[in-house]
Amino acid sequence: MNKPSSGSPAKPELKPDTTLATAGRNPFAHHGYVNPPVYRAATITYPTVEDYLAQRGPYAYGRVHTPTSEALEQAIQALEGPACAGVALLPSGLAAIATALLAVLKTGDRLLVSDSCYGPAREFCDTVLARWGVTTTYYDPLIGAGIGALMQPNTRAIYTEAPGSLTFEMQDIPAIAAAAHARGALVLMDNTWAGPLNFRALDRGVDLSIQSGSKYVGGHCDLMLGTISANVAAYARLRETVLATGQCAGPDDMNLALRGLRTLGVRLARHFQSGLQVARWLAARPEVLRVLHPALPGDPGHAIWQRDFSGGCGLFGVVFEPAPEKAVHAFLDALTLFGIGASWGGYESLAIPYDATAVRTATRWSPGGPCIRLHVGLEDTADLIGDLERGFAALAAAR
Ligand SMILES: *Cc1c(COP(=O)(O)O)cnc(C)c1O
Image 1 (cartoon, rainbow, N blue to C red):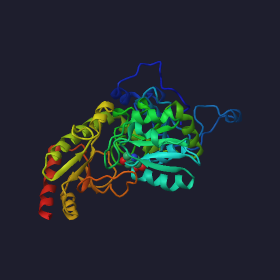
Image 2 (image 1 turned 135 degrees about the vertical axis):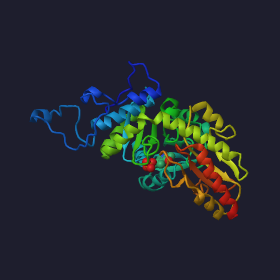
Image 3 (image 1 turned 45 degrees about the vertical axis):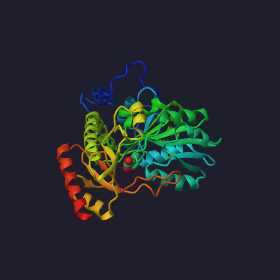
Image 4 (image 1 turned 90 degrees about the vertical axis):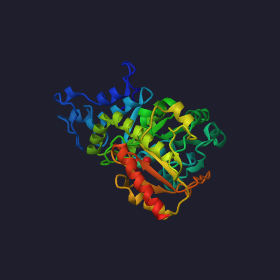
């Protein structure tokens, strides 16, 4: 992890696509080669005892940082903008969630978590955090500024995710952040769906912004990585926690993530465009009750999305008109271009069935029919729509 810094205020900020192509690169530190090499490193050696005792040199130990981790941290920090004081790289998105929570909480604290959060985040709160004496209260994701009424003197942190996993409910992040800060709490956000390209969370009051780098940053379903971007208020505690718990990401995963970042802008824009095209087509189908996608004008979260986000990605939910489970499974099994599998953010399309009603504890979520989640990849949308037509034919046949 790098020493804290407040971005590079001296230089004019570049546009995101330019940042993606330039950040974290220094060819002339590597014989002119365009990309930094992959440093696989544990031990650092020193020419003399004196150098060792003084820990002379830019690097200390492979776990702490290498030119590879530094390049990726710098690139992500540049994308987050001047509000970002530093970035931590973790071995997975879930590790990033757990580490960010550990960084801000202690025994006796209260934590508020959105009822629509990523399932394994809830699991971490209900098991490990509970064991360490942190009380988690789940709240209505649509609560907005009303979150203030749930806060107690020992409410230390508010955990958010927008749009929420599976239900795609939007959250009013600036309103929640204002209420949190007025009462001395920090705000964490899982920003995997939009990422800093489409929602600069730290500019909207988030103190610790988390991404699963395994999704679009990697973009090819071949790595595990998590990132935490912190503002000045949160960075010192984040750095202390990451270093004390010995967290680091693998050199090859970091290198693949750095490669993924170079094309993130064009990939994400295409995923978003294609996803919207497929979502609109689905919304017009008689078998579909509604599509859960905040960028669609009819979506309950659309106004917030339009106000706060500059884009999105290829992930959304579809609620079918009531149909037997076997018909929904026949729909999914008939798809040939959509793989059946969780995770997302790679170049390929995916589909899964889900039930997001049982996990809710603060609010009821009643979709009105069976749900599937689609990830629209980089395939041609005409082919994807053809595939979904085959699915609907199978659904009709299985009723
Ligand atoms: C996948 C995912 C994570 C976890 O990331 P991993 O890298 O798989 O550990 C966290 N949040 C969201 C919203 C996700 O979809």
